[in-house]
Length: 144
Image (tube, rainbow, N blue to C red):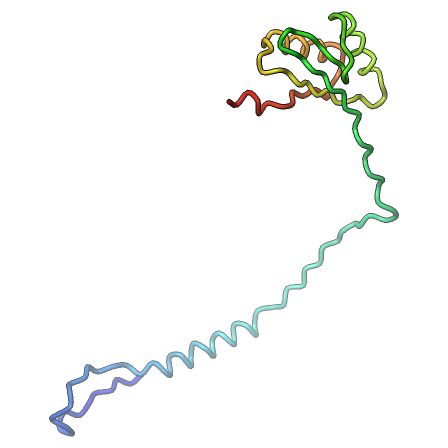
């Protein structure tokens, strides 16, 4: 590698430049090494064995049956808009719903002024009768 020294006698008016190294041969050697490295690396052929499904896709899941259970602030219950007389009638409806081959989803809509004990008792009764899909809907009313 050569170092270029400027001749000070050639021109006295020119600024004195610092000596610099000629980097062109260095870059050439690095490019040659890079090309040799790329050529010598073996080509990787990866294959992934995958079992793809055959036949028709499975049918879409049926729409779930939804039961809307409303609790008012004076502890009155409504099952899909029908008034429920007492706790025994509610338990009977829960039991019938739990015995169906496809259990319905129970959506509990409680008035914001409904007591917590009433909501908890309804959820507990549904769970005791064997219902698995129970949810409290409309919680955004409680965020205020």
